[in-house]
Picture 1: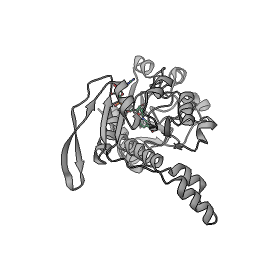
Picture 2 (picture 1 turned 90 degrees about the horizontal axis):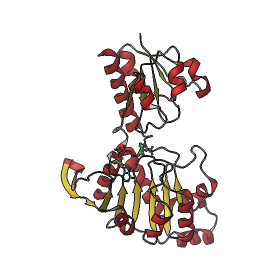
Picture 3 (picture 1 turned 180 degrees about the horizontal axis):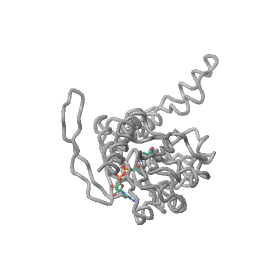
Picture 4 (picture 1 turned 90 degrees about the vertical axis):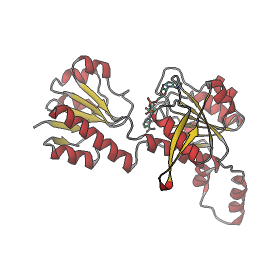
Length: 316
Ligand code: NAD
């Protein structure tokens, strides 16, 4: 019987699929420092973003034949090394795209109506304070008719564009690769419509967008730094549900403090899991602890897809 260690957990549906196919699945978490011992008797390990599968762990556990990542980013796995050693490395890249895209709009709606700050300051005692807050949050805006600039037009960027189009926003898109001229939206009642996408240069996108949302992988140089913030419209909003490091956090803080950027919605940070305090406590920053893929639906899709990939690998 093949033994799988789901070290960062796996949705019950995925576990059940694997068990029905005859695998033993352990979901007990083994701390990183103990993994090179604890993993020795397993045939495969599945992880999310927490567990690191580096060269030394791969070398210490020659029984491992497959590393599965529930989700997209594989920065926590030495993928090339594992593949050189003949291991299969699989992930579930599309399963969480819609959930991440919807979180972008949770941050956008929060930012344009000051929910992050009103959540912190409510409840209040007495009329005066209530009326002060009413005044403070009276200058909200609507999303319809506004421009959203999407940097990185892959799976999540496109899902984000579809939600934006559904809300009546205009989409500007930039990617290193070619961008489709239109996207098909599936609306309620299974109505399908094709909507245009404006592919533009990154400079034009930054200059013209009311809101900018990042959907790129990690890279050494941040995509939004001091120069890019300077180019933005006054009062632009910024959302990052991609990876820490894609925004220069010093430059973001400066732009927030000067009012150049009116709000930021952040699901990812430098230095996770201990983001810097001055961003965390900023009144114009809406925060979530890297939960883009953390919906029941996405986790079910991830668990199912991962289980099927493992079954295919070991049984075929
Ligand atoms: P994807 O590979 O489908 O798309 C990424 C796109 O970014 C590609 O089209 C690529 O060409 C483009 N790109 C790369 N560098 C670029 C640059 N400098 N400028 C413009 N475009 C660039 O990936 P995806 O599935 O859409 O994921 C996007 C990001 O979201 C990744 O960083 C992923 O790790 C992250 N993510 C976050 C969460 C979360 O919980 N917040 C969950 C899933 C994925």
